[in-house]
Image (cartoon, rainbow, N blue to C red; front, side, top):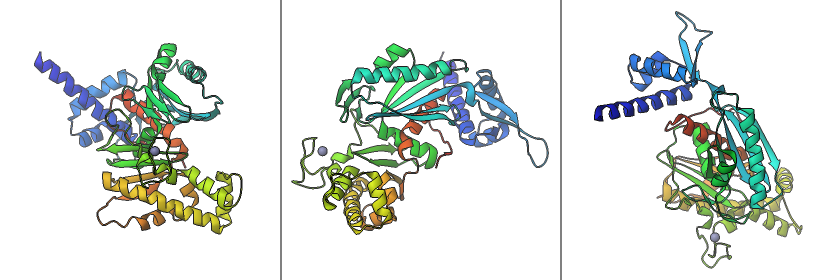
Length: 389
Ligand SMILES: [Zn+2]
């Protein structure tokens, strides 16, 4: 019957709205929920009975309330279940366990000295199995695992290509689900990082772009609060926009790609060349920056100029509210953002803010956990307050 269908649909939307607000506020009374959502108190009460019944929400009496009756506060029952976020990087796996309130329970980075696909799958199976077992006693157990991939991921969550591992067309999701009998999700790491920036830091910033400047360049694009993935799922390959006609040859087949001028390895190789050293790494750069070395300053100045050329193009394409740059290198450099902005002089490009990421290399696993929680509660948006940094 039509009416029943509509009723169930509306009930589902109301439930999602109520859950979303309990997550965002941490603790909230039924009266406040009614005020914020515009739903009447009877509707809220009926829904809350269900949520209490399902162990998703719990009640606490507020301890220190100034005057009058202490209201009963609702909050997410964090210990009802757990999520696992994994960042599958080259030679290392970073992971994070979070409860359903978004609190970090555990995090670790383990070395993984293999690029062999089957061996990597076995490492992941062991890791996920361990936490599946560990949390089996909680009401919902380990509800989802999301894995961030440093490469292109198809819209059906199969892997298209991981450059550093040289993996082509792998069904990691299928292979893990077969072995583990649980819900696994695969996502590009830059997408997860962008998602994390919005959930933990730049709340409600609907047009947010995250650029990861590491050994390559990755980007996660959020438009109108949703991840923008493109036709195949590969949107955000901004490292391969051409900024230099007849420039250096890139592995993608083109010449003069941005990545060849603005990925962090460019700084290391250029610095090594200028200082006549065989190589340079992050610690060398840190040391040289601390010593105010003029060559390092010069290399960084050129680097920042090259980064700004790509930024100018990206800003013109997306008109972002928030542009987050996730870069260990730029964080070392004082006034990096101010110097970048000095190059962004075009009168037609506009954005609200450019910021360096506080989440850094944790962004991907944090995003994975947050997305798993959002999926579990079936809400359209979540807001957490980061306890990091
Ligand atoms: Zn390229």
